[in-house]
Length: 250
Image (cartoon, rainbow, N blue to C red; front, side):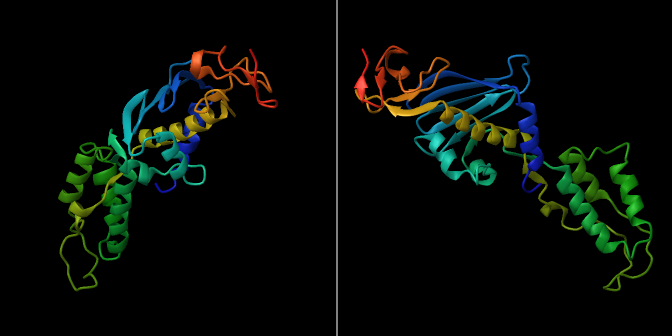
């Protein structure tokens, strides 16, 4: 996989009915929940503390550490509104960002078969039967895939190869094969974080309380246009003000 468009499409499909719940929001301390109210599938939560963001949910959890405000780090490092899996995997301190990829295994196998099949009559069919159609080996697992590739040999030759050799075919440099790719759930988590930040940012009114400049007004179901309430201070009744006149409404 390269751009992983299938994971982006899957995330959009599997979270189409999700709703965000702000469970806690106090500066760099945030706790956001996302779930379809009619289903428990693919729910997830995102929490932040200074220097750390944790993704947890219907699968493995991931902990990222790098910057005081992790939301700002993900905003800055996202690629054109998408994810930045390579950089974010470097910042993932807990959780498996990568896993075995059968797709990569197949690419190594068929590349070497294509290079050699001119000199080995029936090689492609034998590889298909002995490796991919085998009732003994399951190449969906990394251990079996590596083992069968290292043990495989094919003896029927059609003639000497480019170097004049007539020995059996075997796969070369199997120990050097890079068979790991980003795990789909890690990519799902990356898309979830980007989407969560977008939804979180959309709840901000954009105005600050004139009495407490470090506090922002947050949109809520009862948010009134032209009137801002700072919900961080003392709930919805605090710091109510009119941003047009810059006057606090008592």
